[in-house]
Amino acid sequence: MLRIVVIGSAAGGGFPQWNCSTDACNQARTGDALARTQSSLAVTADDEHWYLFNASPDLRHQINSTPALHPKNGLRHSPISGVIVTNADVDHIAGLLTLRESAPLVLYATERVHGTLRANSVFNVLNSELVARLPMTLGQSFELKTPEGKSGGMIIEPFVVPGKVALYLENPDAGPNFGSQSEDTIGLRIQSMEGGEYFFYIPGCASVPPELAARLQSAPLVLFDGTLWQDDEMQVAGVGIKTGQRMGHISMSGPEGAIAALEGLNVVRKVFVHINNTNPTLLADSPERHKVEALGWEIAFDGMEICL
Amino acid sequence: MLRIVVIGSAAGGGFPQWNCSTDACNQARTGDALARTQSSLAVTADDEHWYLFNASPDLRHQINSTPALHPKNGLRHSPISGVIVTNADVDHIAGLLTLRESAPLVLYATERVHGTLRANSVFNVLNSELVARLPMTLGQSFELKTPEGKSGGMIIEPFVVPGKVALYLENPDAGPNFGSQSEDTIGLRIQSMEGGEYFFYIPGCASVPPELAARLQSAPLVLFDGTLWQDDEMQVAGVGIKTGQRMGHISMSGPEGAIAALEGLNVVRKVFVHINNTNPTLLADSPERHKVEALGWEIAFDGMEICL
Image (cartoon, rainbow over all chains, first blue to last red; front, top):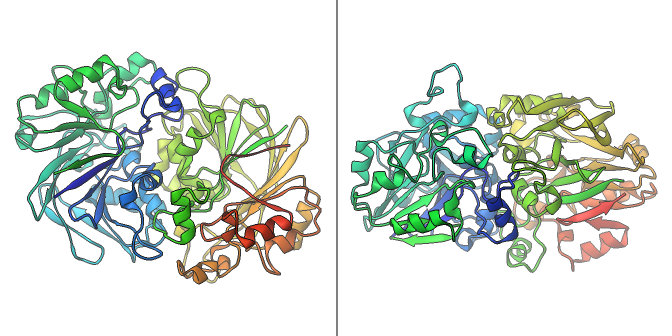
């Protein structure tokens, strides 16, 4: 058994974004559209030990909104046994700052991301005597551990996907990829050790090359990068100059988009996560939402629960 | 005119704290006690340009909950013109990560705090072309500026108060003060340029020496460090080993406490802010709340608005 809760379904900035007043963000403020917090999952294989996949700036509120993540045993306790971080984007690491206050945890990331965390002393609020920082190596599966060294009940396989280094780490002198390395953007295959159920979590991805398509073939569940509906969407909305490709994100639509790329792969359940506030599929009554759903995809929402 | 909104009234961790299940935190989860987010004020002198005093990890939600801080002019806009940071504690700087997304801002801090921000590359999400980082010098008053270089309508005087360096910056080899320097903990006197109204904001303070008492004499309003009710409160509650003095925080009660220290100073309005989740005055019906109110103090709550 795997129990997956999408505790944050929006991309960086959330929905609404603090400084954005598009019609959509204003609808999220008034409650006319469903507001969403920033990108994160909580997953358990035993209903006791939960693991966060990415830690967003909204984490404190996400925990408050998710009873399964409330403390249960003793005055200081959390069901959260560990965190797995897929990149060093602010929307995926800032929540680590919420996990201070002397709690035992296991923190998994690539050596590249660990290096960024070490280089930023603010993350030393995670007490090194209580928080083990363990490396993930691309292509090498590993078993999640609890802080006590027991099994967390899941096997994780990290793999490279096309992407980009975090914005604040970009090197403008390093050419068109800004110094991005293969460890900068990864996908995860997450499998229950007991039952063998598995799914893929790929919240950031710039394109779907054949090896990635082959990997996803016939998967029971894929949670995939749904940042943008179309590549120039932020320009069209008048709120930014960057394209999806510049940000390292594939679009949902179009001949090179995620919907087309995963078409025919026989994936049982396809869910978009990490959805930007400019993406019209966030609005329940938009033509784009109807289209994406008609094509067999779901749009994640905060609190969405999936059991495998 | 000064309009002050306490957008976050709790100390670091908030109320409830993510990994705490004291009776009080559980009451905050169920709604039986008023939940509170982490320490921050929003202040304006003209109802147009707002300044944040400290930026907490809860900032995105604090903005969502405060209509005055919603964007008003254009697709990308914020009434927030700047941020003033009183120390480098996580509960006072993590919210800077929320203020990304290419918004013009002015960020004021002591050189010591600016140094910490520069040393942590994650804060480079604040675009240096749009966010001016300006130094505050202890004892030197300055005028708040808007990002466009206009007047923000307020004069700020930063002054040293007894305190301690941020936990993650402590140097265990530096003796009993952990390497703390005078710039590590400051208070602010905030004054309207037009009307001359003023107040003091002192969210962290270890004691009240005579020069600080003299400074506060006859002030119209003091927002003061209300972290703990008594120095050994976390030990008594069974949730921590540190005393208030070890953390650099005075207690409310006792002969050396804040209530005693400000007694007789003729301060018109005294409000405790930065209140820890172990502090019994957070509970509206506690004997300590009744006592603190009977002694002429108020306990701040999220959304508390004060006009001078």
